[in-house]
Image (cartoon, rainbow, N blue to C red; front, side):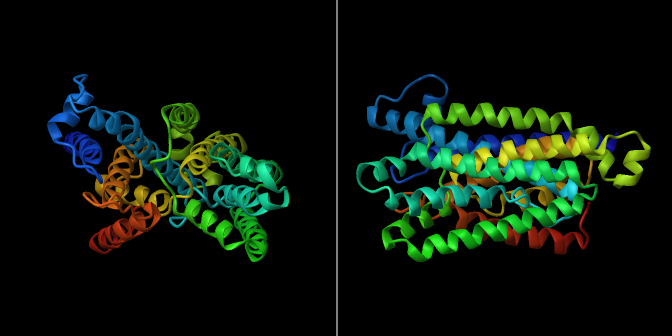
Length: 343
């Protein structure tokens, strides 16, 4: 009873922090907008200043929602991979999803010059990068799914994912060698990640794929809790290992693949957020961890994005740099303070 009361208190506090982080993210930026105008816009009372209202509705609000989707989606997909492989260093991209996406984007950006002229300019459009990233992720996922149906050892899938990452990195290196300085710069900028490039239409498409991944994640909660006991014991309890593994991999691919396609590869979040949630709630129960990671991942991503905006200046730092600089010391501090890793 005391544990349940403690969890309710923790969730209430986290939800309050999420609300504050969300409002602060919309409030902060290169243009200073009074908090009352932000609150008014969110509650259906538009600001009298049309430029402020335009910035809130068409830039900062979609960016804040994107931060929530990215933080929660990567955090939950990281949890799925850590549980499936029983490896605390596993993240959402261990299956090679990010590497496949990077290869797809590299083929478009650094291979577009082979097509020449206007066609090359069309290839390097915003939607072409999203499609190329999605196709790259899907191709790697397809191979991983075929392999997962053939092998019994879950760790073999992890190793194969790492090998695919090495292969795609090698191909990207070859493309980079022959690419121009402008193409290299564009590819590097994509690799920084970005939350502020999505329109409401693109955000709507991301939400649909995100919800599909979330539904599969929630449906896998019982399987995830059982897998913590070990695959052999899980089989003795009647768990269909191959089916459960398939659902978990598909859920991870939908979440991590769609986020990478629309926002680029975002570092740290998927690896660290599950550990932060475990330390805060002192549990490995996925019924508690999934909503906890949703909230904590959203808060961290909103805070990182607010810092990256460098409020009151015209500069924006790479979101990947901020997620690592901001989050890694927190994880180190939590692990040193607790002296052990809950898993």
